[in-house]
Length: 78
Image 1 (cartoon, rainbow, N blue to C red):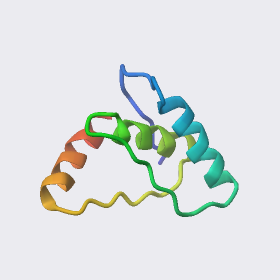
Image 2: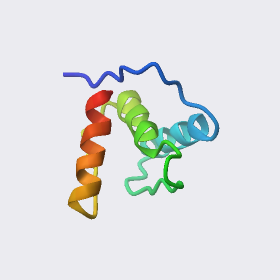
Image 3: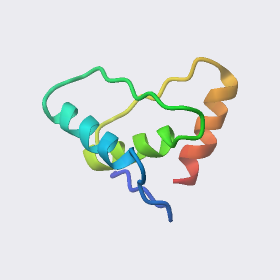
């Protein structure tokens, strides 16, 4: 089953460059990467775009239950 991102939003600002760089790094065999951004900068949406482009199994970690619930709510809207 393919992951397909369904959203009216499009990557903007630094997101297109971040998506391209993360995808390129994955294609080059870089396994560990970190995406840093301030609250509300679109990190979850950026990673959803990376998942769609790569179709790789992905584990998203959250350091507490509150953030895990927030991530779940965001991902299920895509």
